[in-house]
Length: 97
Image (cartoon, rainbow, N blue to C red):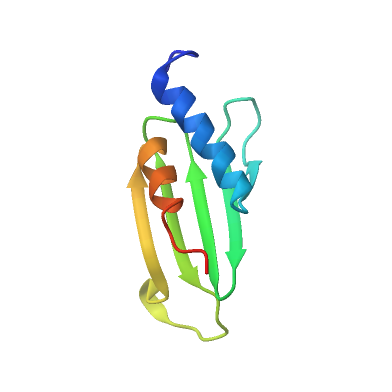
């Protein structure tokens, strides 16, 4: 993706907004273009965002934090996959109360 691409600019702004909404991001691989992992805990929920580039390989999920062991991801309330724009946009619409 070109450095001044409108999609990249929007994705970077959404990433900044996600940080303001409580996500803490860190690189999970070396290098300036390594994948990002973001985690936010709100009440009984844990939100996870994985960004592996801006055009593909991104996903996010919201799961209930509980001491119960439930098979097959039954505690997952939201799940989204795709490009960074769609994933970040979806995550920022999730209720934070």
